Amino acid sequence: MVAALPGVANDFLDRVLFRYFDTSSEAWRASLGVYQAAVKLAVIMNLFIQMFRYAAEPFFFQRAKDKNSKELYAVVMEYFTAFCGLVFLGVIGYIDIISLFLGRDFRVGIGVVPIMLLSYMILGMLFNVSMWYKLSGKTNMAIWITMAGLVVTAVINVVFMPRYSYWASAFGHLFSYLVMFVISAWLGAKYYPIPYSWKRLGAIFALMGFAYAFIAFSSGTFPAVFPGFSFSLGPGIHWVQLGLNTVVILAYAASAWAMLRQRSVGITSE
Image 1 (cartoon, rainbow, N blue to C red):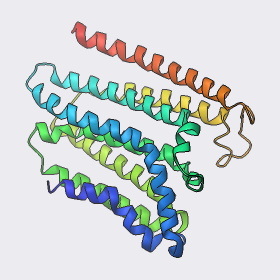
Image 2 (image 1 turned 90 degrees about the horizontal axis):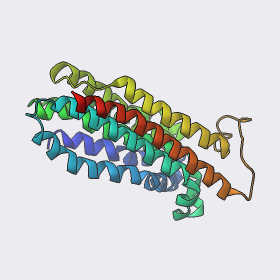
Image 3 (image 1 turned 180 degrees about the vertical axis):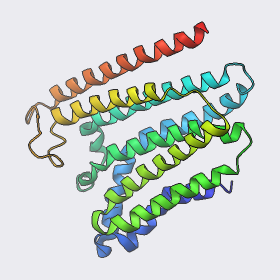
């Protein structure tokens, strides 16, 4: 419970800081509104992670005494990461439709959505690698891990929000969860080693990255960041773009499935 308090503060600290550090202190409510609207589009990933947490924690404890439990945890991590990648690409691929749920004035912050999706994805992976301190009885470590994340969130928002507004909040979450993930994975390898295949996880991220880049470039999403790199299919044919995005997402799913099946067959045969 004590360890959860910094985690809760970490999730909502940026909302408080908008009042004091946003680029326009007089209109900080507008910036906060745009940011929270973008976060709502990324909530699909967060909902999946919450459902996974409720189901996975009893499963991890139930299997803790099994002979191959650690190998099983590693496989769960891979399937979880691959499915999160599918959710990520699904939201990005159909963002034109999903964004219709937002008012026109709030769509200016749509660029924050990929960052928040990735942040929540890493948060879910953090839950997986953090099971070590629960299974090994070293729960006192949790508060230091979450405190490290809280410090990162506070520093990034205080330093960069006056210039970059809600972009600082989004990247604050991303780097905060990433720091906690790295610390927890490092400590877990020391106190409760689980044979995660980091190469395979990296390959899943690479597949997701290639698919995201193709969708973003082909739909002309990148020009605001990288001028001159637009390969948009042009106005008035968005359904063609959605069809192309669907093909890319299915290709990612098939590739990830083929990769994970090899790992699963190897575990089963052992």
